[in-house]
Image (cartoon, rainbow, N blue to C red):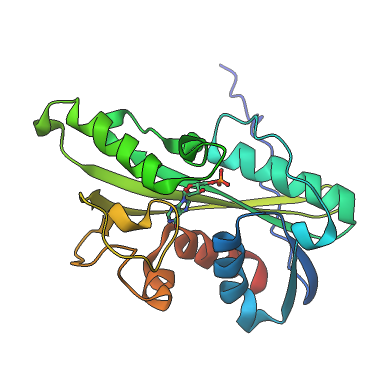
Length: 214
Ligand code: IMP
């Protein structure tokens, strides 16, 4: 009898520390840039947005949040020569088989009308049997790309349920219809700091901090 001692899985690549300094936030979404800036503030990182460097948005051709985050971060890292951080995120509704998911921004159309996007989610939910429920979660993939090709990706999520009509104007995107588990106010009603403590982006960010900033 022979025992195969060869392990086909490559050894895990060790995390790389993120040194203080300039970093490009590879997003043109002001809501996201604001949140990521606030999350990075305590770590001596000086974030600049891709838009302020004149870096355009690449087409999001990936089939997962992580693939799209990597594609955006790689694009900005290659064009700027700086470490780039990208976020790809969205709302996944159980009764809609995970939609709008990676298409969350696209459901808002060219004009980024999230009132219309929330209405579309509600219309689709009304078309499925009510026992399917209104459970949903936000997902966030955060990817760091270094100009030399190194990549780190972290995923976070927050679970909740969808309310109708939307409530509150403190957030962005689908915030006003998302009630986090155990909460009584939507992400559109709570203060940004309270959202930052429990959001999918904060969950992914905690993992990023533990891996590359501590
Ligand atoms: P993308 O990651 O740029 O493709 O866009 C994701 C879209 O998902 C955003 O435009 C928002 O509509 C939605 N989204 C992501 N994160 C949040 C959030 O924290 N609150 C509300 N909507 C979000």
